[in-house]
Image 1: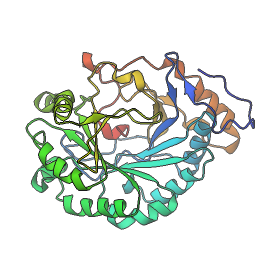
Image 2: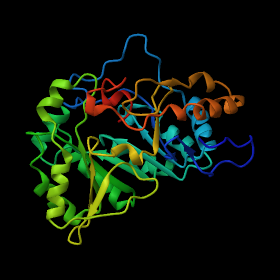
Image 3: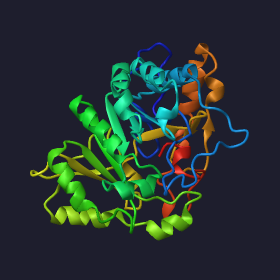
Length: 339
C-alpha cells in the first residue's frame, strides 16, 4: 500500500492505492441504492424487498465526503451503480456532486435504461460521460422473460439517443444457457452499424442463485473462441479498464468484450474497489466481509479518518475470489453490491 500524503499536499491525481500484489485501484464502483425496478431471473427473480432494519442509502452529503476521500487516494474513475441507480430520486444531484470532486475525470453509470430516454440529457448536463446499459437480449420476448418487463424497445431508443449525443456507451448482456446464448448472430447484425462496446458477462454464482446458476451457467470462453475463429482480434487492455477482454473486427462498428470470472488469472488485473449503498467498503465483489465507512462520513473534518480507514484495509484484499470453490462471500445477489 502506498503511503498516504500529508493533508493538503495536493494528493488528488497521484498514484492510486496499491495492494500487496502490486494491483492499483484508481476505479471505484459506488452503489447509491440497493433497490431495483426489474426482476431479472439471475439476480432478483422475485423483485426487490428491503431488508427489515437495514440502514438506508448514503445521503448526498455522505456520498460527497466519501468521494473526496477516495480522490485523496488516487481515484479518478467512478461508476455509479445500484440496484438500479435511476430509482433514486436525487440521482442527478449525486452525479453533479460526483463530477465536481477534484480528480474524478471519468464518471460512468450502469443502468437498466428504463429512464434513459427521459433523463439522458439531464444526466449528461450533470457530468455523466459514460454509461453501461443492461440489455440481456435483443429478442423482445426473451428480454421480457429475463427482466420481467417488456421494455426493450424503449431502452434501445435511449441507447440510440446516447449514441447520438456522443456519450461513451457499452451494453451488458449476461450469458444464460438455453435463454440467450444463441443470440450472437443477432448481436453481430446490431454491432455492424452501432459503435458500442458489447460486454458478454459470464453468469456468476451468488448466495441465493445456486439452482439457477447450475441450470444456466455457460462458460464465456466458448464464446470467446467462437469470436477468435471468426476473425475478431484482441485489443490491449487500458490502464483503467474493467475486467473485459475486448475484441474488434474491421467489418463492425462495435466492439465485443468478454467478462469471464471463472477464467484463469481473472483477478490479476483487478483495479476497482466497491462501496455499498449503506457505506460498506467491499474489497471484492465476492469478499467475505465489508468494512463500514459511514461513521467517517458525518462531518467535513473527518476526511483524514476516512482516508486512513480506506488505506488501512487494502492489505486485506485477497489475490483472487473463491468462486471456483463455490464460495460467494457476503453477496446474496448482484443488486446488493452493484455487480
